[in-house]
Length: 557
Ligand SMILES: *[C@@H]1O[C@H](CO)[C@@H](O)[C@H](O)[C@H]1NC(C)=O
Ligand SMILES: *[C@@H]1O[C@H](CO)[C@@H](O)[C@H](O)[C@H]1NC(C)=O
Ligand SMILES: *[C@@H]1O[C@H](CO)[C@@H](O)[C@H](O)[C@H]1NC(C)=O
Ligand SMILES: *[C@@H]1O[C@H](CO)[C@@H](O)[C@H](O)[C@H]1NC(C)=O
Ligand SMILES: *[C@@H]1O[C@H](CO)[C@@H](O)[C@H](O)[C@H]1NC(C)=O
Ligand SMILES: *[C@@H]1O[C@H](CO)[C@@H](O)[C@H](O)[C@H]1NC(C)=O
Ligand SMILES: *[C@@H]1O[C@H](CO)[C@@H](O)[C@H](O)[C@H]1NC(C)=O
Ligand SMILES: *[C@@H]1O[C@H](CO)[C@@H](O)[C@H](O)[C@H]1NC(C)=O
Image 1 (spheres, rainbow, N blue to C red):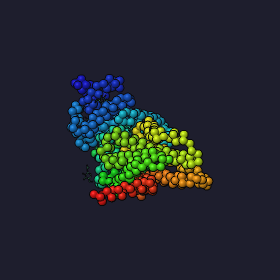
Image 2: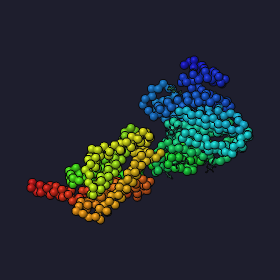
Image 3: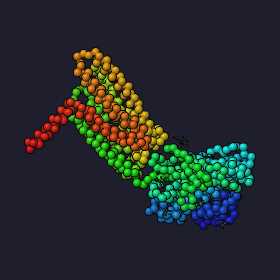
Image 4: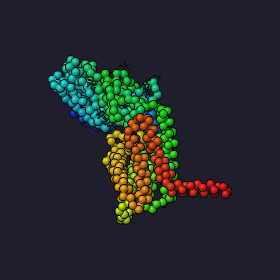
C-alpha cells in the first residue's frame, strides 16, 4: 500500500511521460491511490493521452463507482473494505459520486481530443461506458458531421457551425453513454410536483464540447434514445438533464417518440436522460376494469368446468368424437385459470424473473394448443361430413384419441420450443406474457392466424359438401340434419374462440374495445357451454333428470 501511494504521489507531482504511465497502471488498480489519480485528472487541461490509457483509467473509475451503487442497493451488507462507500449511500452521496464520475469521464475523454486539419474520430466501448469523439479542423469539407452513435443512443449536433464560430475554426464533441449510471443518478432525482413513479427509460448520456473555444450552440442538439425498458403507453416521457443534484427539464423537450425510440432536443449540452413518469395510483377506470375482468373470468371458468363435466359424463352419439372438445376445454380452462392467478399475484410473481418466463411460456403453450385442438375438431368434422357419402373405417382408426392427443399438444409444444430457441428473451413481459417488442408476439399470433385461415377453408369446404349432400336427399336424412347442426355449432365455436384474439390485436388502448375483448375472451367457456350443453337435447334431458332427482330427493327427506 505504501509503495503504491508513493507511486501515486510521483504521478501527482509531475505527470510522467506516457511510457511510464503504462508501468504505473499496475499500481493504480490497488484501491486508495485511485482517488488521488481521479483528483489529479480534475486538473488536466491540455494533455493528449493515448486511447488505451484513457480506457484503463475509466474502467477503474467505474469499478469504484459500481461499489458505491452496489452498497446503496444492498444497504445491510457493507463489509467491503472500500473506504469511500458507507453502510448505505444517501441520495446526496449518490449524487456526489455520480457527479465525480461524470466529471472524471468528461475530463478523461477530453484528453482524446487532438488537433486535426480536417476531421477525425475516436471511439471506445467498455462494459460501463461507451464513448465517441469527433473533431473537426479548419480544412474540414463536410457540411454536416455524421450522427455519433452508441448502442442505445445517438446524437446529432451541428459541429461544423460551432467550429466556424470559434476562433481556431476547430471544434470537438465528446459523446458518452453510461450503462450503469442510472444506479447513481437515479430517476428519483427528478422532482416533479405530481407524485409519480419515475423510471429511467434510457442510458444516461453526456455530450460536451472539449477544447472548443466557443461552446455556444448554433442549432438545437438532438438525441435519439432507445428505450431500455418497455414503454407504458399511459406513461409520460420527459427529456431531462443533470444539474448538480437533480434531473431537470429546462431547455429540453421531446421532439418525437414511438414505442421503441424517443428523440429529445436540447438547447445546451451536459448530461441527459429520458425518464418516464407513470401515475403511482392506477386510474379508477382500471380498477373497475380489473373487477370486471375478475368477475367475467370466474364466470367463464365456472362454465368451462360445467361444460367439461358434461362432456366427460355424457358419452353420447358414438359417431361424434368428444376428444377435441374436451381438450379445448382443458387447455382453455387451465390457461384462463393460470392467467387469472398470474394477474392477481403479479406483484409476487414479477420479481421472480424465471417463474414469470415459465408462466409466459406455459400460457403460450396452453392457448396455442386450444387453437390446435380447434383445428383438429374442424378436421374431424370435415371427415365426418365426407363420410356421409363414403365411409371408411380406416380414417377413423388413424384418428384415434391417443394419436390426436399427441398432435394436439405436440404442435403447440414445438412452436413454444422453437420460439425459445430463436428469441430466448422473448418471454416475461411486465405482465408475465409474451413481449410485444421485436415482433415476438407473432410466435403466438402467427400460428393462430394460420389455424384460423385453415379452419375457414375447411368450413367453406364443409358447407359446400353439405349443400351437395342435401340436394341428393337419401335415406340418411336425419344423419345429414344432425351433421348440419354439428357444423353450425362448430362454426359458432370457431367464431367465438377465434374472434376475440383478432379483436385483442386491435385494441391498442381503446377502452371500449378492451372491455369487449375482455368480455368475449373470458366468456369462451360460457359460449361453449351454451352451444354444446344447453342447446343439446340429450344433455338437457340429463340435466333435467339430475335436477328432478335432486329436488325429489330433497322432498323425500
Ligand atoms: C488542482 O488545481 C488547483 C488550482 O490550480 C489546486 O488548488 C489543486 O490543489 C489542484 N489539485 C490537485 C489534485 O493537484
Ligand atoms: C474491478 O474490481 C474487482 C474487484 O473489486 C477486480 O476484480 C476487477 O479486476 C476490477 N476491474 C477493473 C477493470 O479494474
Ligand atoms: C434537431 O431537430 C430540430 C427540429 O427538427 C432541427 O431544427 C435541428 O436542426 C436539429 N438539429 C440538428 C443538429 O440536426
Ligand atoms: C421537490 O419539490 C418540492 C416542491 O416542488 C420540494 O418541497 C421538495 O423538497 C423537493 N424534493 C427534493 C428531494 O428536492
Ligand atoms: C403532472 O402534472 C402536470 C401538470 O401539473 C401534467 O401536465 C402531467 O401530465 C402530470 N403527469 C402525470 C404523469 O400525471
Ligand atoms: C442497451 O439496451 C439494452 C436493453 O434494451 C440493454 O440490455 C443493454 O445493456 C444496453 N447496452 C448498453 C451498452 O447500454
Ligand atoms: C442548474 O440550474 C440553474 C437554475 O435552473 C441554472 O442557473 C444553472 O445554469 C444550471 N446548471 C447547469 C450545470 O446546467
Ligand atoms: C422509432 O423511431 C426511430 C427513430 O426515430 C426509428 O429508427 C425506428 O424505426 C422507429 N420504430 C418504429 C417501430 O417506428
